[in-house]
Amino acid sequence: MSKNQFSALEDRTAAALEKLDAVGGVLSPSLASGGTDRPADDGNDDDDDKPAKQSTANALIEMAVKHCDLFHDERNDGYAVTTHKGIRRTLKLRGREFRRWLAGLYYAETERAANNEAISTALSVLEAKATFDGRMLELSNRFAMREGVIYLDVADDKWRVIEVTADGWEVLNKPPVLFRRYSHQQALPDPVKGGKLSDLHKHLAIKSDDDRMLAEAWLVACAFPDIPRPAPTFHGPQGASKTTTARVLKSLTDPSLTESIDLGKSPADLAQNLDHHGVPCFDNLTRIPGWAADLLCRAVTGGAFSKRELYSDDSDIILSFKRAMIFTGINIPTHAPDLLDRLLLVELERISPDNRMDESSFWARFNADKPMLFGALLDAIAGTLKHLPMVKLNRMPRMADFAKIACAYAEYTGVGAERMLDIIMSHTSRQTQEVLDADPVATAIRDFIHKRGTWTGTAAELLGLITPASKPENWPKQANALTRKINVLHATLNECGISVRRDRAGTSRNMTLESSAETSSLSSLPPQANKHAGFDDDDISRPSSQVSSQTKTSSQVSSRLKPSTGAGYDDSDGNDDKSGLLSDAVAEGVI
Image 1 (cartoon, rainbow, N blue to C red):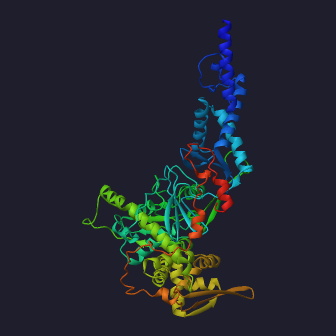
Image 2: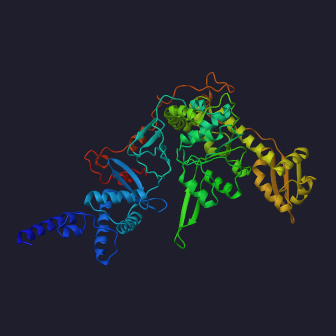
C-alpha cells in the first residue's frame, strides 16, 4: 500500500469513528478494513464480537431514552411513549411493536442492524429504568374516565382518542390519557353527527320497547368504566338473530377481530379474555359452569385474578377488570342467583322468512349507518353526563350505579327517569321469576309460605315440610344443605315477598319465614324534571334534538384537558423526540 493510500484509509477510519461515537456506535469491520459499510452484528457469538454487542446495546439504550418517555403501569410493567411520523403511541417494552420500533430506530440512525442479544440487553435496562426511574401511570382498555370526562380509544393507526364531556365530544390526536392496546382490537368508525341512538333498532329485532330502552342505556353505560354494568343476555330460538344483535352492540363499543370469545377451560383462560377485551362477548353459551359464574360475577362488579408468572417461583401476575359483557344462548345460560342478578335478560323471537336478510346485505346496510349511529352514541353519552348530576333515586335497585346512568339517559331522550326506573324494577321481577321457575327449592318455599303466611322452625323441620314425594335432581339431602341453599336464595325470596330471619334458641338455630308486602321502587327527581309534555308511558317517543345546544357546564375541565400547543406537542419541526406527555399530564393531574 502506498503512503497516499494509507493516509486516505486513516482519514476514512477517523471520520467513521467520529460519526459512530456521536450515536454511541462502534466501528464496523468493513469500515475498519477500508471496505464498504455493512451490518456489524451478524448473529455470531464469537468472543471478539462481545465488545461490539455491548456497545450496540448501549447505543440502543441511549437512542430509546432520547426518543421516548419511559414509565410503568399499575401492574409494574414497563412502557414507552414513542412518537413516529407525528403519531404518539404507547408501547409495552416487552412487546413486539416496541422491539420493532427500537430496531428500526437503530438502523435509521446507524444504517446497521442490531442483533437480538443487543436488543434483549437494552430492553432489560430500559425496563429497569421504566420501573425504578419512571412514573407509575394507569392504563385503560378502550374506555377511561378522568375527573368526570370520558375517553374512548378509537384504536386506529393514528392512536386517536375521543373525549366526551357534558358539552359534547371531539376527536383528539394527542390525548391526555393513555390506553393499553391488544392486537385483536379494531378501530371504531369516524363519528358523524345528526343521528339518534334509537335508529339502531332499524337493524335489530328487539320487539319490546322496554328492552330497547335497556339496550340503549347499556350502550351508554359501556363508556362509564368505573361502575358495575349488567350483561345483556340475548336468548331465544334458532334464527332469532342473537349472535347478530350481540355483534352489532360490540361493533359500536369494542370492535375486534375476535367478535366473540369462549369461557376457556380454566379461570386463567377466562381472566385473560376478560382482561384483553373492553366488552367481552360470549356467544352461543349452553351453560355457564360454577367456576366461570363466580369469576363473571367479579368481572361485572370489579375483581382481580392472580396467577404465577412463567419461569418464576413466587412472582405473581395480577389481572384486574370491571367489564361490560354480552351473552347469547338459546336458553338463559345460568340460573345462579348471584350471576342472574347481574344480567339484562332480552328474549328475541325467530325472524320470519319474509323479514330475513342475507349476511352481506345486512352488514352492508348496517355499516353504512354505523358512523352516524356511533356519533349518536357519543351524543347520548354527553347528554347522560349532563343530566347525571340531577338524577336522585328514592330507592336504589340492584346495580344502582347503572340505574342512575340509565335514568340520566332517559332524561336525555325525554322518556324520563321515573319511567326508566319502572322498566328496571320490572326487569328485576323478571329475573326473580326466572330463578323461581328454574329452582324447585325456591318454588317450594314460596308456595309453602304463601299458604302459611309465617313459619318458624329449624332447617331440618322445613326440609321435611317442603320435600315432595318425588324429589327433583339436586334436592337438598340434609338440613345444612338446605341452609346453604336458602343463603343463596335469600335475595330472590325477598324479591318475591318472603323475608328470612334467623335466631338461636338454646342449642337449635331457628329461622322465621314470613310473607311480606313489597313496595315498588320509584325514582325521585325535582318535580319540574319529571314533567314531559305529551309523554305517555305506553307510547315511548324520542325527540330528534340532540346535545348541540347544551349548557357548557364543564368548560373549565375541558379546556384544561386539551393538549398544550407548546413544543411538547408540536411535530411541525419534523423531529420525533420525546413528546413531553408524561411531565405535562402528571403536572396537570390528569393521568
